[in-house]
Every structure is written in structure tokens, then in C-alpha cells.
Length: 164
Image 1 (cartoon, rainbow, N blue to C red):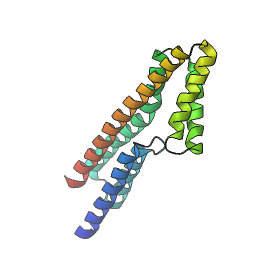
Image 2 (cartoon, rainbow, N blue to C red):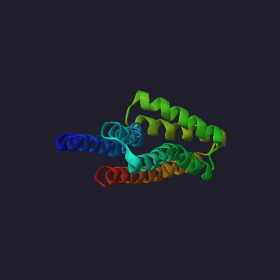
Image 3 (cartoon, rainbow, N blue to C red):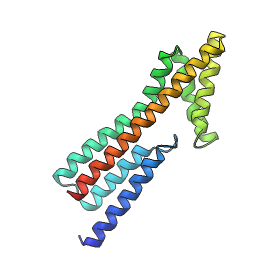
Image 4 (tube, helix red, strand yellow):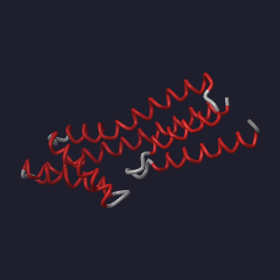
């Protein structure tokens, strides 16, 4: 493969990975999946090799873990703040629907409102309901931080693969 083609593939891959990384800021954009697809595309275009397969396997594990961690942390924090599993499930369903109604922030807003309403109906206490919402929001914030770090690590692993 010629040097200019290799450089072009690397620049294109890094551009997609950075798009995925900054896409993590927007809840509806699957940033880690975008980074993973870019790594897969790089491997197909430039070849995997032994190091590539090892790095791609680690990148794949990080993508799967990061894709699950968001919902787990949000639900766990809400549960620790007193929310019921039914309320958490309602929040997740409304959160998914909210992404379609108002892209970018609709999902988060819908999830938090749904959790508040479900908990208020269950408890008849707005302060306790708000405490559950705070727990879910706290979990969402930590999930973002963890996924962002995972995205940076995934890009770093690809850089070692591409430039080693």
C-alpha cells in the first residue's frame, strides 16, 4: 500500500473516531460504536495483523462494556436513591421515545420526567421522587465520564495498532 493511501486511511479513521468521541456528549449518538466501526474499517482497509487483532479485540470489549454501562449506572443510581424497578423501566422506555421526539436531549429529559412522575404516583412525595431523579442524573453523569474515558482508550489502542 502506498504511503499516501495509508495516511489517507489513518486520517479518515481518526476523523471518524473523533466524531464518535465527541458524539458521546449527545446521548443519542452511539459514540463508542462509531469508534469501533472506524477501527473495523481500518482493519479491513489496512489489514489487521497480529497486533491489530489483539487491539481490535480489546476495542470490541470496551465498546460492549461502554454500551451497557450507561443504562446500568443510571438504573443503579436511581435504585439506590429509592426508585422502584418499574419506575426505572418506565424511565428507560420514555427515554428511548424521547430521543425520537426531541433528538439530542429529548431522551434524557423524557427519562428524568418519567422517573419523577412514576415515583410521585408510587410515593405521593415529590421530594423523594426528586431524590430518585437526582440519582439517575448522577448515574448519567458518571456514565458519560466513564464512556468518554473508554473512548479515549479505544482511540489510543487504535493509534498503537496503526502507528506501531
